Image 1 (cartoon, rainbow, N blue to C red):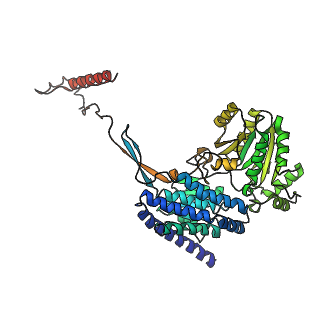
Image 2: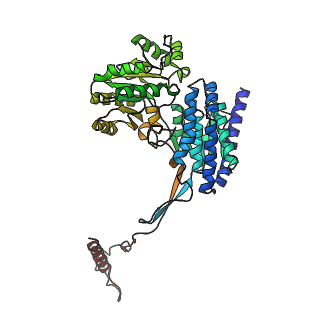
Length: 499
């Protein structure tokens, strides 16, 4: 017990110290001009990019999740791609002038940001969040997941050293090393922490939203993909397998279920098999579902981000060596069908529906069960159907004819490159965007008068004198009724003049 108490006290003290250092550093950094800020960020992006492979190897070794080569790609995306997408955004001084309306806007940072990083993407998310925070002239304190403290801390160390070498104040970027619940709570409630960015488990995201300060959080994915009869079937099959296999599906935007239009369902299944999909028998799917999920619906942590072969070993199923993903044919969505939940491992559900209306309904059912507000996809060439999916689906990212993993994060689409995908009001969040630098700064607005303000002149009325005759107005003064008549006349003339 004393040892546990000591760890809690150390974590609490560290949280206070890191926030204090961050506040001092940010108060100095806020005076950096745009060129100085961009030099710091460019240095950070390049240093992280150069360390991408080493950090990926560390992440796999520490978490035992995912694929080193794929995590390398994510680190490169989080550093260089994200930087290229934000480098030209002004975050200092006057950022916009509206001469016609006589308003100009000034960028202003939040201050100190606390960022929670998940075990599924422990280095790439740390790189991404740090880059967008510092670009907006904030300080940031990174909180690693308890299962990935070393690799996250190393990513943050690389970023901090590069930033300081480029002139940033010491303490602007830091990482918690005493990862304890007491320390997390202390960090988030610190007065100087002005914003929380929470990426991780649902319970932690909900806690971040409950602290009582602004929070940008994510929600579960469970992405449905509808493949229409008009689709390029070979491309759809290839995209699904590549997407679900990527880093063993630890990005929550991967396809959780394929909803195949009935006329092309068999063709799609065969094309998926040619690309490395292994379709489970009904008994195998039932066995895997019971092994992967607890009775309360929570997924067993040791199944997250594992290869199809390891999943087979854990569930007692024989999986071919060349299988890249596992596919379970399902007929229902809900608690009684565990594999219809979000899975974060290379397993995808497969449904067959006749026509896009039925496919649409199944997609909505999937999102309502888990993943509301997040992402969905469709492979289709009928623009009317695509429009209807965009109008009707309770998801804020509708990815068309692409991998939903790559499309949602902005790798294969023109969406803002991001590793924090907000779910809006439907998912319990404040934003529905791909979170980027614009969300981490406030905007002052300086507005000049463009229309005179001349309200009607109204005088305080005295109580009515009752039945007795009112006293005559003193000589040289107008009575109250005369004043009211004049005011009404002025108002009528003004209204007539304005047409």
